[in-house]
Image 1 (cartoon, rainbow, N blue to C red):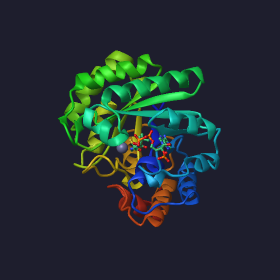
Image 2 (tube, rainbow, N blue to C red):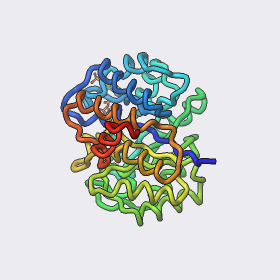
Image 3 (tube, helix red, strand yellow):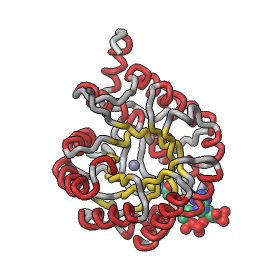
Image 4 (cartoon, rainbow, N blue to C red):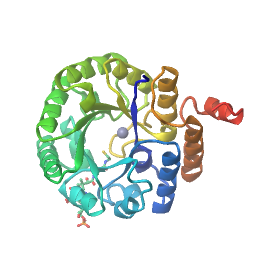
Length: 303
Ligand code: COA
Ligand code: ZN
C-alpha cells in the first residue's frame, strides 16, 4: 500500500500575510476553492490576529463563514492569544494553531510578549481547546535560527515542545520561519523529537530563503515525518521576521513525494491551475522551482 503524506496548505495564511496587495475575502475564498479543487485535505485558512498588525488577514470571521467543503477538509486557523481563540471559535473554527517562537526577541516582535508569557498564553489556549474539544496544534517558530538572536538551541525547542504537548497540543509544528536550516540539523532535531513523541504528532514548516526547503523536507521525511506545511506557488513570509522569503512550494513538495511513491491525494494538474490563479490574484508569484515544467506537462496533457 502506498504510504500517505499529508500536506497542510498554508498559502491562504502564510502565503498572503506578507503580501503588499491586500486581497478581499472573496478573492481569498477563490484561492481556497482552487486548493479544494486540487483535493488538498488540510488548509490553514487564515489567522485571527490584530488587523493592525497584519492587515492582509483582516475579516477572518467572514472568511471562515464562507469556507467551502467544510466536512472533507481540515481547515485550521492561526491564533496568537486568547482573544484570537475566542474570535475563531465564534466564527466556527474547528481546528486552531497557536504560535510560539523559540527566542525572546522573536516573540516580542511577532506577538508583543516575552517567551515566558507566550508559552503561558499558548498553554492556556491549548487547555481551553482541549476542554472545548477543538483540535489544537502548536507552532514553534524560529526553531533553527532567529533573525535577531541567531542559532536556536535545540534543547529550547525540545522543552517548548514538551510544554505544548503537556498542555494538550495534538501536534507540534517545527517551523524554520526564516529558511535558515540545513538538512543535517533538520535530521538531528527531528530525530530527537520523533524519539520523544512519535512522528504522528509532529510536522514541519520550511521556508526556502536559501534554497534548502525541499532538501529539508526530505531530511524530515527520512526521520519519519509524514506531515508538512507548504504554500502554493512558494508564497509566504512573516512580516515580523526580516529577510525571510516564501515557504516551500506545494507543487514542488507534491511532485517530489509523488515521484518517490508517496500518496498526497493531491491532483498536480489542478495544483498548476491553483498556482495560475494565485499569480493573477497576487501579481507577485513566480511559482515553485518545478512550476514551469509542471505547466509544460499539463499543456501536453501529461498531468
Ligand atoms: N485578533 C484580533 N484583534 C486582536 C487580537 C486578535 N487575536 N488580539 C488583540 N487584538 C486587538 C485588540 O482588541 C486591540 O484592538 P484596539 O487597538 O482596537 O483596542 C489591539 O489588537 C491591541 O491589543 P493588545 O492586546 O494590546 O495586543 P498587542 O498590541 O500587544 O498585539 C497581538 C498583540 C498578538 C494582537 C499582535 O501582535 C498580533 O496580532 N500579532 C500577530 C502576528 C502575526 O500574525 N505574525 C505572523 C504569523 S506567526
Ligand atoms: Zn512560515
